[in-house]
Image (tube, rainbow, N blue to C red; front, top):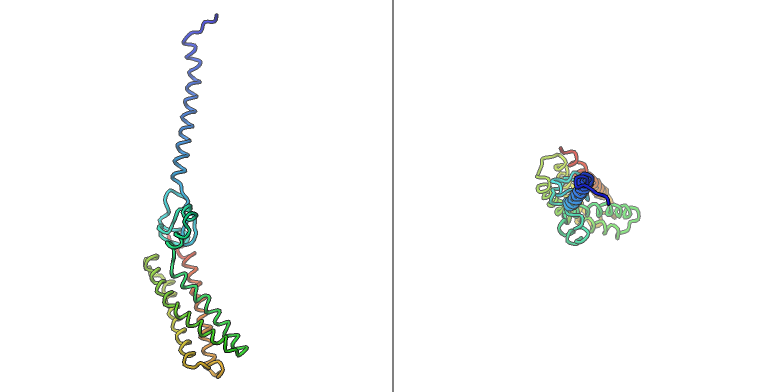
Length: 228
């Protein structure tokens, strides 16, 4: 029979017990950190430009487009409630601004076809497209000024004044062209200087629309990124 002393048992088994205790403590700490990390970290999406951010809360300002943190939504919410997200994040100005971008180049293309073929149908279509553009321009201007005051704090920057001047010029040119065409329905057939003036006014409107789109893109993707 082998006699084992109590002190020997404690001396040999105590390190094993202590190591097991340390391992269980480490595993417990890791599991707690993992749970805490997974519950704290979320993915957020800017509903204005689509920028993705990871953190417990959305950023105060989007580093890409400069939108306020209130425009961020959890990425999971976008997947589960897309219609609600579309309603909550609807912006009138970008929608209204795209109408002249589409209508005016089409109107000028139809004008070229009318000049080359003499077709009255294309010439009538030009006038209708011009009238539709004139109906949308005030909405685009009003919503743009509203966004400038609310989203950008009405900051006095040259790019905003350029857009306002260009939009005002677009409206005045459109009214001029529509008035000429309304007073002289047979303008394209009769010819003369007014015919080419009318054509140049439409061309100028297309160029102004391109400049407005250019400055709008700078606002959305570049201007705010350069702010400290």
